[in-house]
Length: 620
Image 1: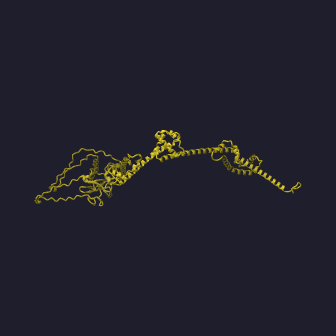
Image 2: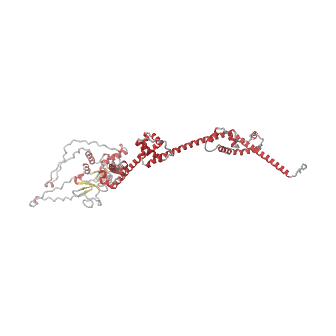
Image 3: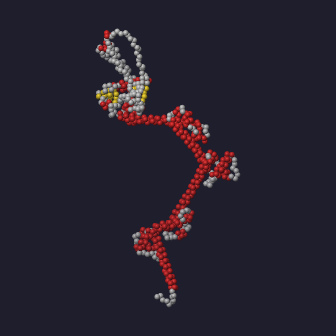
């Protein structure tokens, strides 16, 4: 045996009950600390005198012995402090104790108290055993503790317990035997009893389960034993340590972790249960409110149901149902009134929505009637269509005929199919404002339709114009590439050339730019492309020292530029444009020179006329 060390006596594993705290509110009848009632010490018996020494005395009558009242389980009641710690109170004797009285203990608890050996666990989860009588501890399970566990298992599974060894009772000692040597009496074995096999107990090995499965089994044990979050680990361990499922978790650390997680989960479960009960109570109260509202609005007309709901007051409702279980299911008065107001508001909102939905449905049907009426266009006035429909309804209700000469009313009635007549009946269900809204909705639809048609026409015309302009530009490119006109050609000349062409004729039926504007843009584009080549050709002609005159043919210039390295990068078309441009400039320059020479001759001739010259006058 090992002497129990100091660290083992410091509260490892199962601990004994705490002493009642002086500050605790538990008392036997006042404000002091609860203290177990300790019976008075029995006085030691006096020494027995010999017969010779006893004086002769007159016998005195001895009063009859009164037995103390027998204690009953009903005398005790179990309570809990604000911290959740349990205590017990005897309402007959007024006694208050922390420890559970013996009369209330189960057979298993009595067995636990009878065994001096207790099982504890160190930080590594290893079990050791401590004897509270001898103050010794051992690592191996004592025989007495194993026997106690076997008896406890049999008791839990309903099996009969084996009879313990009994000894022959010895007679009461006489005064003479008190001073004599005691006689040893050998114990006599009890009669042999039939052997009863205890039921097999399932062994829970941690290696057989996953962590989640082991924790669920451990939690199931805690639930069955009634463990709550108000208990600490030591109190919990006293309850569950004898169950085989206690060993499903390998170490004490894992068991503690599972216990604390269970406590957190237990708190959440209790909160969810509380919320669920509150929701059920709220649901019952709402059903009561709905029942009362339905009863009050049952006989009200359809149009006045919303007004009837508005007239329901909380005070009258509370006075009527203040003893109803559904009313009392919600304990808080303010919460009751709040739920009542919210439920009434929801019903009012639902009734208002239903009324609006019905109105919207009639407005939609009347709008359908307007949309199928061909006599209504963007120029139709509201008062005209209103008067016409009113007359038509009178005719339909009275079964009359349309008066002769009223062609519009006759056409309106002739087009009235059964479906359109049903749509027209919505007119009677709507107010004047709703009818006007339906008419305006239809007019906006017509306006959008008209705008869409106009937009479609504009889109088609824009597409036609774009295609016509592209065809005309394509014609200009083809003629320009063929050399039918140059960048210096006037529009009048080109217009005369293409007057009979289809692409030119289509340009007069489209919107946007005119053919002349498109031609001008085309020429400007070509000039922008030609200007770099024009400067390049001017430098090339200067390099080869070739001059274009009015009599110079194009082939002469082409031959003169053949050997120049830069002439290959100039398009042939631009060579011809440059030659024509330069030739036209030279011709214009020659004409201007001739005109200037002619004017000089005329001026000189006029000068000669101003002087008196004769036939014999000389030049000098």
